[in-house]
Structure formats: structure tokens, C-alpha cells
Length: 376
Image 1 (cartoon, rainbow, N blue to C red):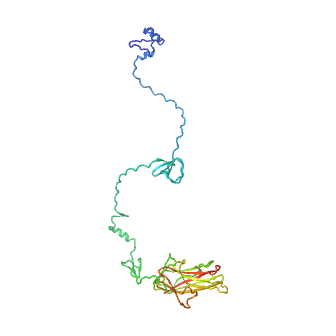
Image 2: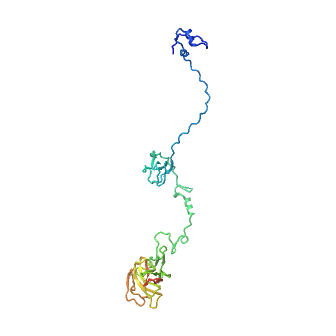
Image 3: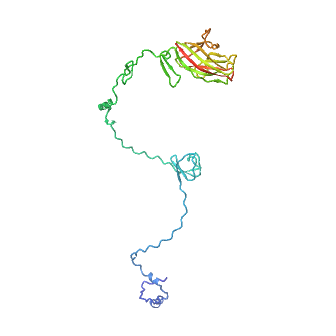
């Protein structure tokens, strides 16, 4: 590019004139040609013109290609439950933090320990600062329905309460003992002390429903069984067929007399049966045999026999004295040459156990009836 001297003057040139030729022939004697750009470079830049108007919006371009599918999100399953089946990307909460499954698992091991199958998503946040204390509540006066203030000053309350209950009248809505109201101070006086087994008797045949008898009659049936007991067959061992309870305090320390009766029915062969009575503190056995009766089969067959045995026993000072158990008489009315003492605690329940010992396992025998009677 050539440098045009600053003192060079230009004159008008027709559009049809070759600028290069004119420049070399008329403007300057130098042979180097000047271009139009050389001329423009000597002219200083003018002031910036005003901005032109905004052009029209171009046409919308074509839609681009769809992007790649992003990674799958997490599936929130709530609190962690051991033994539940979890799959990849399941998320749970445990211990204040959240965890997400990185391997399918149904283990009961918690996520904080089972790092093989779980990864931490978000830790439990720190404990925040304690909040400011709330505004104290408004203190309220005691209120009972429409009544306020202390109860001791409520005359209208007393009137209301009086209207809720009838006046107490001895013998009408208050129970009395021999005409005396029980709403009195001090102890209630009794004419006579209550002594179990003396002036009262507690029948505990049904332990869930004991029955108290006052001034028991004399004699008094302590126990009575009028239906068949358990039939004994197929064994030669002494077996309980019937049981009678003698409740605690049926007798007192001064004693009395006990009579027991049983009726036995034998069927089968002609052999003898040994029928016994045991005294025990348990209804299932383990006591002392106090009586034996022999049910004779007889030489004529004896396939169907009924006998009744009876014994009387004296009770005194926690001892029961009875006809010897080695004596097999059906009654003891013929005389009692000697007796056998047996311990008897009147303060506890006692049982008479009526047993049967067969002589042939093909036989059968049963206690059809049993009774125990008290005399004092």
C-alpha cells in the first residue's frame, strides 16, 4: 500500500475514468499507482451515525436431535423393614438418615451396617438450637361447672349435692344389725364369737362357690354321693371309684364322731373284691387306709353282688380313731376289740377315697353310693 502525501489535492474524477491512469498521468508524476483504499485511508473517520431500525425476525430453525436418556431416579420405600425385599435404587430411611439400595437384598441387617447392599444418601441432620421459651399460659381459677372459686365457700354447691341423695334413714336405706345402724363410730359388737366348725360350717365342695352354714344341725351330712362313681375294671391295683370332701373346720379341736357308708356293686367272675376307704388331704390319693370291706364272690358264681359297708370313727385332738383296717367286716357294730389312731388335721380339707381292688381283671366293680355324716 502506498502512502499519499498529506498535501496532495484531489479533484473530481468522472466515474468512467481509470483512477490508476489519472493518478499517474495528471495528479502526480510518480509512477507508483494509488488505489481507492489508499485514498480512503487518508480521510479521517467521521462521527458514528444513528442506529438503524431492528431487522425482521428470521424464520425458526429445524428441531434438534433428542438427547440421551438420563439416569433413573430413586424409588422411596419409607422406613427400613428388615427381611423385606429391596431392589436396586430403592431408598429408605433408618436412624435419622436416608439410604439407597446398590444391590438387591432381603437381609435383616440394617443399612448402617450392611454397606454391601446400601449406600448413604443423606446423613441425619445435627440437633438444632433450643427454641425460645413460650409465653406463660393464663392462670385460671378453679371451675366446677358454673361454680368458680374455692369449694369450701360454695353454699349453692352444698344445696346441689343435698339434692342428689335421699336423707339417710336407719333401717330404710341404711343396713342395720339387730336394729342398730351400722353408721356409728367404734366397732360392731357380736353376741358370740364365730368359730369355724362350731357355730358356723363352711362347705367348700365347690371351691369357687363356698357355702357358709350357721349352727349346723346334729347329726349333719358332710358329703353325699348318690350316683355311680368310676367303674373299676381291667386292673388288679386298688383304684379310686368315689370321693367325698370333708371341708376344713367341719370338726373343731374338741372332736366328734364321723360315720361313713359306701355301697359297692360287683359284676363278673366269682372272685372276691377288696373295698377300701382312704383318708387323704388330696382327692387323688396318697393317704392312709382306714377301712377295708371284703365283697365275697361266693362259691355259687357271684356274678352280680351288692354289699354295703359302714364304719364309725372318733375324732379328738387332731386324731381319728377307727376300727382296724385289717378287719374286713362290713360293719363295726358287733364290737371293736381294738382301734387304730390316724392323724387328722381338722383345719385343712380332708377326703374320703373309696377304692376297689379286683381279683380278676375281667370283673367290674363300682361305688354306687357314699355318705359321710358328722356327729358332735
